[in-house]
Length: 218
Image (tube, rainbow, N blue to C red):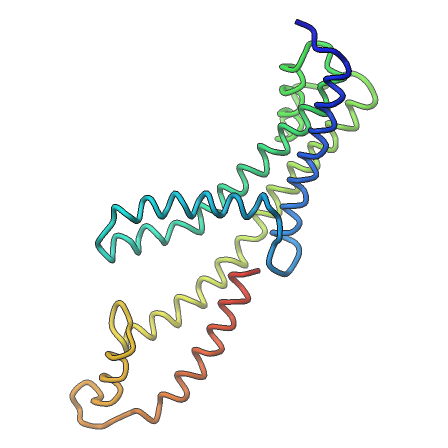
């Protein structure tokens, strides 16, 4: 069955919107230095959050829940990368469809070959050539930006874990306020109260909370 040209043109318009959606989400998440307003990114985050909430409902032990939640950030990053690439892939395939002489299957093959810079399929024509070059550039930029963002995330994670490890030594695992106050006041049985150190601790954690808010939101 041959799809009418008008239908393929409409599909190409939808494909262009999908490419713009993916590019907008990548830009808002990895380049713009503030909270992203991308609907696609929020949808991915909510889907991963829901999956983890379902998994958490079956994990009653604190340590098991902690180990499970430790993987959530990585899961969100991988899910975002996968969705960005898939949305861009479908978008470029639909853009190539009106020019595909062998049907929609060849359009998807050409798009995949270009987006992942494999280069085994080269469509004929000037317009398809421009589209596949754009697909190659978009695929490379998405993957490169995601990889380049990892050192920033790891640095923020290391800062967070350093403060948490220091707090665990003073307030137990998991840390909580009454134990922190008790250990500080009684100084682990030495009888010498060290409550005068609390203002410095609160000041350090106030700065830490601001750093976590900025780094994790961004």
